[in-house]
Image (cartoon, rainbow, N blue to C red; front, side):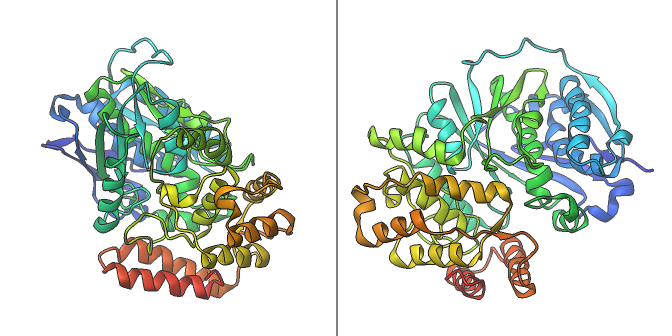
Length: 445
């Protein structure tokens, strides 16, 4: 079958464009070029094409694994090419229906392997502002020289208002001060048709979608490689996810991220042994109690803001809020909205099974429930907070099963997803109103 062909990278200042001929994969492509615009890093034009092509490769490799199609490039870093071949076996083991046995990466391989970096060598951290990457920054603050925040991952590339709020939050804390702050705006989720791939492979995903279950780890780490190369940093850190201890396929794991190498360094999957509750309790809370200040950005909802980065009503927000309370931290201290109404939303959802997930998802809530102290002080002693935590400690938590929700709920979720992708240009009050309407339709607000 006709291969996917990546053309020669074209550099225009901070912009890198790589033409794509999708070949036999054309039905799964929505655009004809990979595009990324970096800010805060110099020297891209001096990098080899073999390094500049890596972000585009990281975006299409997983599709190639799934379809069993070759990829052709002019030149590619030899260490990264070897990583791509090893990862074909990793993804094939995760998803046996992927046609990884037919994968082939064609092109001249260049570059000389360098000695592996030492654990304390300087590093670049992929930083979203969420609890996971914040925990990694606190733990590695003596090693992290630069932060890379991606516009096109959690924040869609069309949503400038939300991106501006995130950028200001990243710039405005003592934790990020003194480090090089770099951004990358890329069409990671627009080049290929992730929603169509999610529907096509839905039977294989225990949770999540194509982006989460397959693509995001390799796309994000590959996007960081030219930045690390330009800055001479031999390590790229990506924070671990919290799957609740469940052994389910996911797009960012030690077996994936730790295999990503280039001739000047390697990627490290950070803090894999800590759950997100552990990160908040053991890393973030002590930092805050020691006088540190930070804002978390954990929300994925299109109606978050306007002054902050979290809606306070979705499950991601309310789980984080509960984790902070159990750790003895006032959620407002880190930018998490909390009120009697938001905690009432959590009670309704956890009683009715409105929130859906797998066994790992349920385990996260049950472990959190078991960690609620019988002695509630500080912010937890506020009457409405105390009532919520005492209720949560004793209640039977109900988490629904993926795919079992009513058809109307699935329609609302699909509308939310499309709205977040296509309607980011709408004024915040309109998007916020739509988000609140969706919450009411889902029984969450």
